[in-house]
Image (cartoon, rainbow, N blue to C red; front, side, top):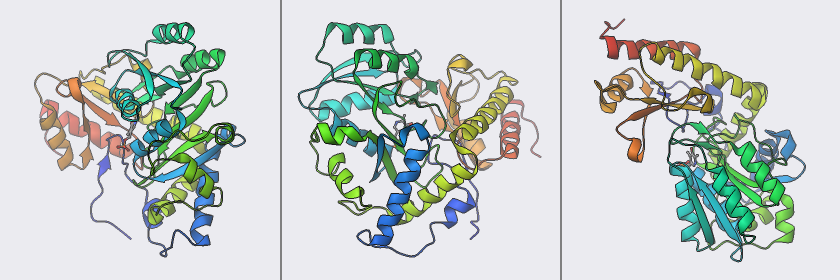
Length: 368
Ligand SMILES: *Cc1c(COP(=O)(O)O)cnc(C)c1O
């Protein structure tokens, strides 16, 4: 099947699909209570924990129908006990969103907030954790998509491991493209989605949970729909308590196969890194600067300072005419930055064309 228009999505998910993943949507209808669907789900669960081979032995993937936020909320609601206490480390929109969730679910929490352009405040984290022994969980964002910063979870995880406090991570925009150390970081669970670095279709998300948790602790969920324990029980056999997105499941399986065929997450990391560097070099040659020191970025997305002479809308609208969708800043950064993600089925030629479009904007070069 051919589609008429190819949009090159440079927003942080959903991504431009490969033909292979798009075509996988066109398969037979299935009832989610039949064994054929259960087989598909079991296959997806196995492939998800195998993205990082270290996770295979001790973690289970729980698949939910919903966007990345659904998986993050299910993780926080189900795993932080009512009698426990969470230390939430924030330096952007997604960390702050998790603090809101934990409040809504009425759990004990302390928030260590940093300005969006700064790293996590690990000194404060260490102080809180050593002074107050009632903390059971640390909650953080791996790749803070607000700015593109890859947070120093290696250091945070080391603190968690040394104090034996469980770490819960939002890996929504890093899973499949950045290092995740399950044991070294004392990781109890991480949440992610089908439609970012895994290149699937939007509609499914998942949580990788340490299996032993289901045995030694009962659910803490204050939500029926977001209770990971009820999914866990039924998904051991491939079933789910509620209707799953069947077609999106076909696409996720195909996307995971494609990731395996392409050499796994490390190859994807290198591919993203090269794309990201190409974009950065191109924009820097026109005087467009990155918001953060380039060494602090993930391979997935970079944020760039808007120049004084062009508004975000002008740049966005011009690029959109040529098929490229870029992404605005959020909150206080709305008027000062734009963001370019480089996930999905994009080619080197696309990036060359993107840079050419920027030249047309900034130097009014005539259109080819
Ligand atoms: C995209 C994203 C989410 C979730 O977004 P959804 O729109 O719900 O899929 C959560 N955290 C981070 C870090 C993200 O980049």
